[in-house]
Amino acid sequence: MLDDKLRVGVYGGTFAPVHNGHVDSAVAFMRQMKLDYLYIIPTCLPPHKEVDFADSPEERLRMCELAFSGIDGVIVSDMEIRRGGKSYTYDTLRELSGEDKKLFLLCGTDMVLTFDRWYRFEDILGMCYPAYVRREKDKILEGRIIAKITEYYNKYGVMFRRILTEPIEISSTDIRLAIKEGRDISGMVPPLVAQYIKERGLYV
Image (cartoon, rainbow, N blue to C red; front, top):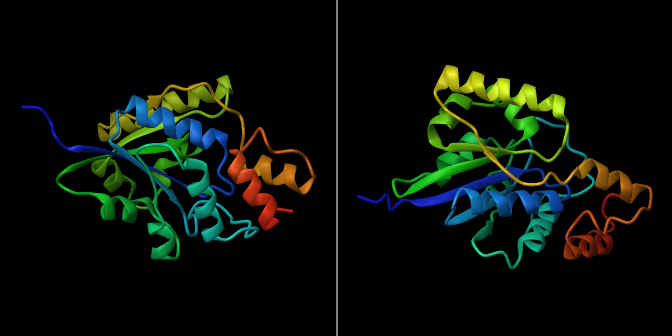
């Protein structure tokens, strides 16, 4: 009998701001995991990093809406912003889970390497199929990633699937710095996001 459960992706992050690397990763995730739809979920307060406060959660949400507009199957959700406080992936997956769904979670390189320090990470591994994407070309890091996902498999019986895509070496930190220095960011973020950042005077 064929599995008729919906394949639902979850891609969370600070997105301060969302950029072309995020969009490219999301599209590859959808295609390679054969997702029915994908939630893009900006955090309210990220538990694992310092927040710049040069923007607001609502502005980060709006930039995600602009970046992913027109991409079929993407749902930009404010669930973590509405929840308030620190945004824990465990709480988000619990809210999204259901008997009719299979959840797939997309992580970046830094998230894979620190996954075992997340809040209730063992529960998370039991709630979803984790995947990761690389947005950098550092070959030395490749060995660390393979060692870590092997460790997760040996300890917890869960394999992180790799999403294959040509790395786009952009970070939100680089974009914020470029804006502060008055450099052009048009090749780093979707056009509507660049326009929004300029109109709102963000990150200057």
